[in-house]
Length: 169
Ligand code: FES
Ligand code: FES
Image 1: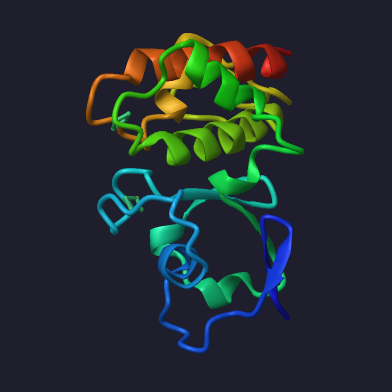
Image 2: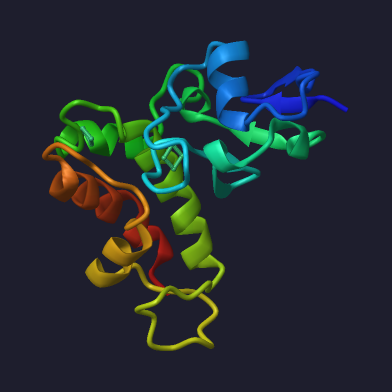
């Protein structure tokens, strides 16, 4: 079975050791997904698998045979930026931009997790059906995505504007 990447079916790589990150960047030339640490520590390589966020540097491409992946290149639809991309522009949510694709994909996956009631380390009510994305929840849930320059507060503001309203119970 092929992997679907941003709506296009592509054959899985012949070398089963190929990470999903290297497959996206080196084979498909989708260089939006960034390689920061290549060991699961920075979040720059985050992509979405059917709405769930994963670190593509820690994933083998062959694991996703038959699955549907969205990278940053697939977020805009019909020439329109995703609302979170627009909010990043409005809130100065990037400086160098290296972390931005991972931040965007991670935040979209994170909002889905909160909607499904998945708790974080700071969630008080572990039985809630959905979790409200308070300031503390947002910072905790996005703590796996590092911004090394100066955009952290703008990133959080953009995510809060776009995703927190969505997830309020
Ligand atoms: S490149 Fe994957 S977490 Fe840093
Ligand atoms: S915008 Fe430069 S690392 Fe985040």
